[in-house]
Amino acid sequence: MSPRPKRFRRLGKPPVLKGFKPIGVPLSMSESISVQYEEYEALRLADYEGFSHLQASEKMEVSRPTFTRIYEKVRKKLASAFVEGKPIIIEGGDVEFDKQWYRCWECNNVFHVPQGQEALCTSCKSDHVEHLNESVRQWRKGKGWRKGHAGESPATCICPECNHEMVHEPGNPCRERHCPECNNLMVRKD
Image 1: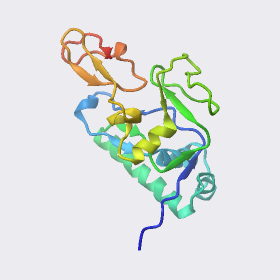
Image 2: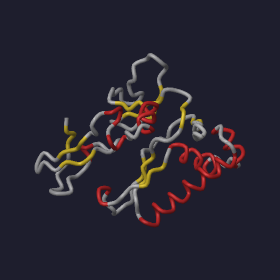
Image 3: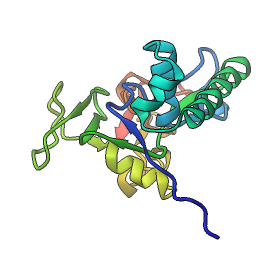
Image 4: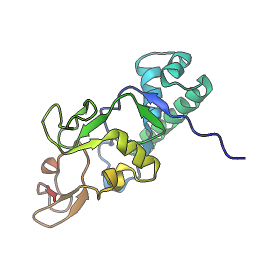
């Protein structure tokens, strides 16, 4: 007997943020906690918007017990991140968006464009964008953004002085990051 197929949770708009990192704990020194888009949405609907679990479950197109399981799971993850000082990464999940959503890798703007239209950031006009719908599909296949977006190698920041390399964090420009080895400003490795 095969398991029942997983039903995708409905999201209107992806989160503006990719995650959070604790102050005073280097990102490279700690294991991150992954919060899936549906967990973020459950927290947003219940705690930020103030919907009851029944109302929120209807918006996400899941049963009320499923919503409650998702909600309790994300609360435990957040408590663990706060208590243990771990960064939170918001990524992937079993979700469907109502439109084609993109995130600009230069300014972190989240936007959508009609089907067939060129995906240029609506804020800074950059074409260096991540197609979030495709990123979620790749994440489900085991290729999350930390391994590269849309199957590519991850972007890298490099120190021009000592050649120390770090994985680029979307929304955190390399030119604003200091090298942990020599404290010089980093640049994007192309």
